[in-house]
Length: 115
Image (tube, rainbow, N blue to C red):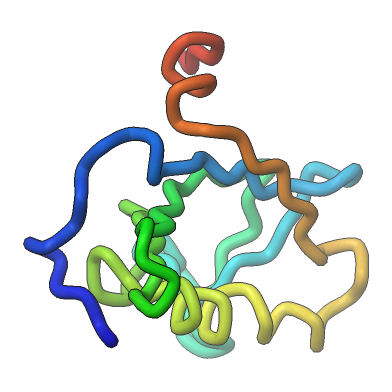
């Protein structure tokens, strides 16, 4: 079952924040609006990137990624985002591979700040 964007339960308990980075602070992510690459799938090398992940309470319903920087639809299904933005990076040097830290949206809002 695919969930329509307008059917999302906006209760924060279903949202998580994903920090994407690595020990080199150079992580490749594909299909990014800010890419200046004319080839290679709109790649951007970020020191870190932050996205929101929506996991609905119904197991048979799609999960979504909210990435304001992606050139994919907003939001994108989590599977599509992974397949088109993260998975292709394994073909690059391992120093550009992502690591992930996932926290609840509630913890993010109460703990983190950005400049």
